[in-house]
Image: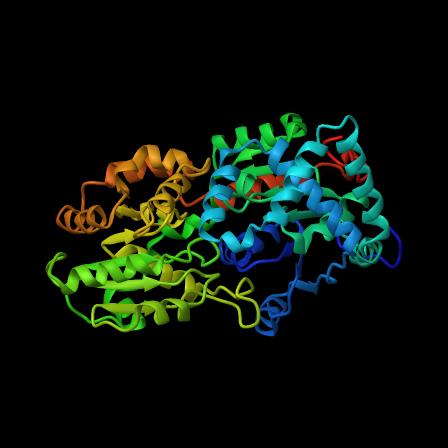
Length: 487
């Protein structure tokens, strides 16, 4: 070992964090602490949060800020073409076309004639022999000459890490760092953050030594989309961020939770409406308004409360402006970053508040959201609005959104949650309030299908995979020299 390298018997594992959900997964589950039992985890953020940094440093962790990626226009152009090729020819997921058709209708200004012409041009160009290989070769050349990859390689070398573990291998904020680590011959591990990421996110340019996934369906998706993974170490670990839901210590006492949310301390039923992001569902506040109108008109009886929870990457003001105040409605803000809504320090208090909200609310409503899985962990009935007022075409396209590849198995298990009109939606809410316990068995089946395990030990499974991988001799590393993984 060179004298300039840290004198430490434990291998050094770089753990990049580029989104708030990674904090919940890596830090708050206890995974980071568990890693320290067999390696030296080195934390690298893509943003600076002094409070979080100080918290981790006080616990003895080494914390760094990743140099911001720099990509020149020529490189960005090459990546856009690769992303197009990936979505059209490699991903082969119905989700891509379903969402594209829906967004073209909902946000037509974002799908101009010029953009469509470029899409058609790139589509037919992809059939020219050798064009795709040329595109990947161009990207590889520009990666070295039109980005700050070399600077990041130098920064990475100074950390003397042996391996890298990421839960967001598809994030552009981490992209150059992960490419640099692969080029530098580091062992690479990834646990895909969510069950929809493989089919909803973009190209993963790095080949990993070990993959950790939520379920068997994800395993099949990975092998289909990235054929090279058929001979890789793939483990079904479940979802560590769901471990909180199976541990009662993360649920407040009911009155304490109500006080925290500003809710009245009475016995009225509580409807949880979990909002989606504006970028996908700009029309969504109408469903909250329809609920309130139905309560005011007596169509939903017994004076229930609606607790609205804002999506972590949405702004609550858009809902307040669209819906306004109402005596039955209480707004709950989710965690959100100060400068960038994706960059929040999720605390254990935030997690306990979410767990309690899921535990104590009676009926859960969302639009095509993974919150369906979260609510099912507490056996709560789920309701999905699937209509757009006075827009039959938009209604049909929204209903198709529930048939995206990641959501299809959920739809098959709980298809009667789908409400294809305002009348059906209001009737479903009232019926469900009257029959609150009829969905529990379906919730259990849904959990088994999506997160596989409900024992609260998924974090430990991830840790065991990493421990076993890092116990191997570093000379066992096989690297592709940073070349692309398709051609």
